[in-house]
Length: 451
Image (cartoon, rainbow, N blue to C red):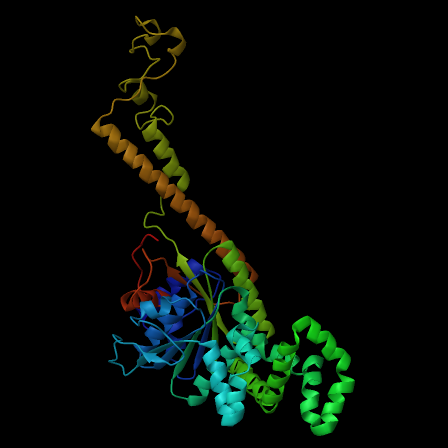
């Protein structure tokens, strides 16, 4: 490591001490890193982070695909693509001098399910499944289907071995880790009593099957028929019979993808903002990933605020603002004499007795006369306003630091990188590239920007 880079690492370590510093570039450049999963609560910049990581890796020579599960269109817009779908699309405008490429796609849950059916069933059975009303409802929005299909799509992308790196952008909030439960939930569903009962007639077959259906299931189907509707129950039975040969394949592929997420080539990045609720969710992710033996690379602390004038405390800024707004509150540099000799000061031996002035109400004699509206007064008011804004910023910085400290005290083992806030939203490759620069732990000191 060069002396300059070492010095920058030491500076980052001082800011984050005693937390480990996350260095993103070695992670992205390592050919052994094949999957990066970005997870975190909503509104913390996961989609932007995933896209910036993908762009940075591509411009360092890797062939990257970014898979977003978030239905928002921000990723496509920031990459200059009209829309994303279930097919990876190459992003234009990427610096390919190092030989890298960037592709992007958005999970189409129903289309992924259809592809599985078409790939693992003969044409006649596939047509029957795709046309089944229960399947159409299941594939379009059944609880847990999106997470399971995300697992399927990730497994498909990895099996093709077409990309050096797959970056996954997950849904917001705790559902971001629901895809870890998808194989277990699917297995429980397929092994459940209801499915076994509905599948039994098809397995028995012929008259025996009809007899079983008429005798053994008459009571159950009668109850289910009243609750679900006779036609719906028939659609479910038809679907289960048609899908019977595929159930084992679902479990096998889901379990394989689950193990892939636990493999050394996978890295999880938890994305959070320096806010209490977001870091509470981040702590949940960290603990859950550890419980599932998932490899955590670290925490990306996004939209961190700073100040180029942090030597001026909030207390001093507020005191200075009050002094400018009313010079009698805080002593001037000249001491009390400076106040006594200032124009408009009352109560001194050199000032007239305002209470005895002709035509003045004695009851208001204690009130100071309003300062004249002069250019100097306007400058003082503007300066006071800026000082108060600075005090607000310093209070924000202190609050963010306390929140970070609570997280790092609870999870000192988690490496962290901070991303300075940008002045506005990211909407193009230049913005993503700037986020990538801020993600890198060995970045030079960044100029302060307002968020």
